[in-house]
Image 1: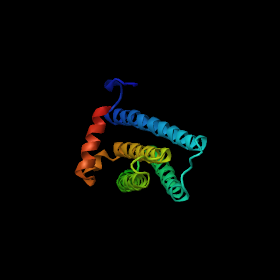
Image 2: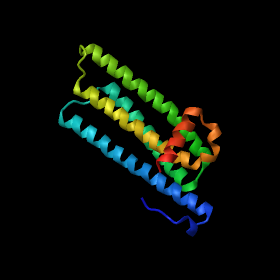
Image 3: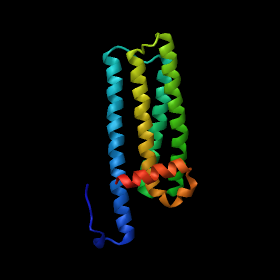
Image 4: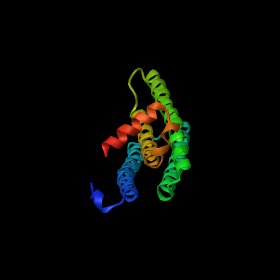
Length: 169
């Protein structure tokens, strides 16, 4: 990781520099998950095991939400809009809960139908949802860098995660 001598930058410049480096890691991870998502779809085509129409519609909805959140996160990064950052953090919580419920329901139904042996496509579905979950989480991490002075607006679990995230860097 690049580093800067704190003596060369004033406090505001050093904070901005540090936030940019931290956000860069999350941006890189978002890109990695984007590549993984492409790989999952390619694997489904290759193995000729597409998602059924209902699940494909759900994935398309999730994809639209992910693209929207990534764009909004980019805007937060460019503008530093703290209110938008807080909104993304809150949206992430809701979306993650929905996605976790989707995977649980889908796998439980599949295991029941397949007598305890999930089909390949069911595992790919879980991986797809997992990758989207991580994209939303990394967007939230970037937003937390800009919203750190507004942390009282986050619940205790979010504050603990934020503190751990800051320690990683």
